[in-house]
Length: 242
Image 1 (cartoon, rainbow, N blue to C red):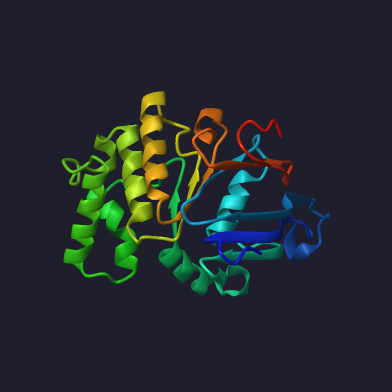
Image 2 (cartoon, one colour; image 1 turned 135 degrees about the vertical axis):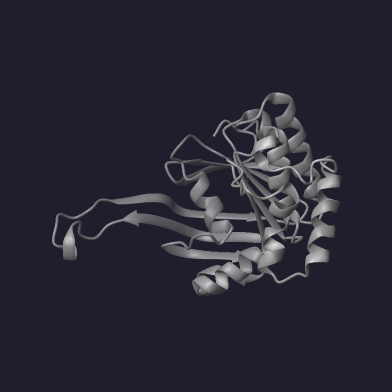
């Protein structure tokens, strides 16, 4: 395990299913699905790491483990110096709030809230006073070119604008790690390039882990970890053919 990494995992396996189906577990056995098998990974502050692979290769599962949204069946995950596998669900939730920002493919913004209020949601959960929440959210949105859209609800924003709001929300707690799952998957080429620029800029003080099918997006990363059938098959530049 790399002690200098902002986030790392060692020999991680994640399995789903198993046991007996039906009431009281008396039915036939359910098959066990192995989403990840003995995967090790690390990302340092200042680094943008791509995670590549076909659908079902384990990319999203790996991101969920790195972000403490899930725990492995076997192996260790260390996020910002804390081993997540040793924590209760409440402790992991607190660690997520303090140490990680997540950019979801479909944004996951709250439709009834303004852009400013969406960005401030993690600060509400941390008990930050309202004036400070407002100031920090507005400052981030301005930095991302949305200073004139802070009061707009998501339904009135373009896809690229909604993605920038999601990035601002991921950054508002100044996390050690940002994980982004297919952040350009629903964006046009020009907007996707702007989003990748923003993610690269945020990596100066933190680690960014970016999962994508898009080789053009992966070309913007420092290195690429490739997965296939839940296993790591290569780690290097995007010139690797896996």
